[in-house]
Image 1 (cartoon, rainbow, N blue to C red):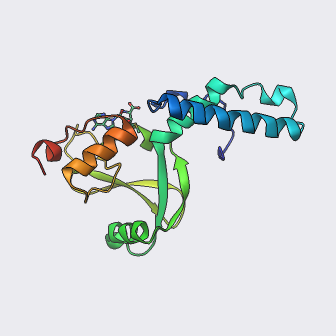
Image 2: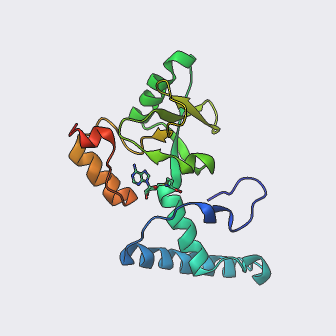
Image 3: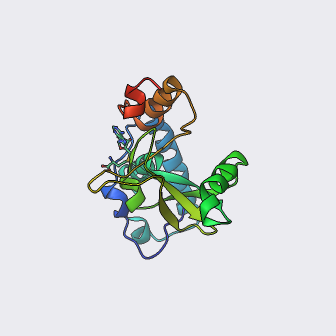
Length: 173
Ligand SMILES: C[S@@+](CC[C@H](N)C(=O)[O-])C[C@H]1O[C@@H](n2cnc3c(N)ncnc32)[C@H](O)[C@@H]1O
């Protein structure tokens, strides 16, 4: 995990955390113990490790879980960006995962009006997919929108902990 720039340990606190099952918590706690002992072996000074508590570690992972984006770099002409991004997803061309503060606040819609895109760099950009009315909420799609309704509902419920009530789901599509 890399935190870019000069940041404080509580930087991600404002983001919504995922709901964690007891199994996930115990896996994270195991990871924490391994990490902590690796730092000990590496003789990291205690004062530099003061932030690294079990509660901090599980809190960070819970936030990364529902807020991280898979970075799929697209290149080419602006008009073709969506196609290039889709091709990159298909080719599993992800260059990494990252949490971006503002994009983390976008809610989901199965028929979104915006899309997060990466153009030849890891800087996230928001692209409108259609005209957006004044006051209309910008929403992105968290999952593969080509899945059928039941599959989408399952992914959203298991991965993000909510039942989707977007217009597309309500129409049965
Ligand atoms: C990345 S966060 C989005 C921002 C979050 N709503 C906030 O206020 O910080 C993802 C979480 O937001 C909620 N969420 C996103 N889209 C939603 C939707 N269409 N319906 C209900 N909850 C949604 C879910 O709890 C989901 O796990």
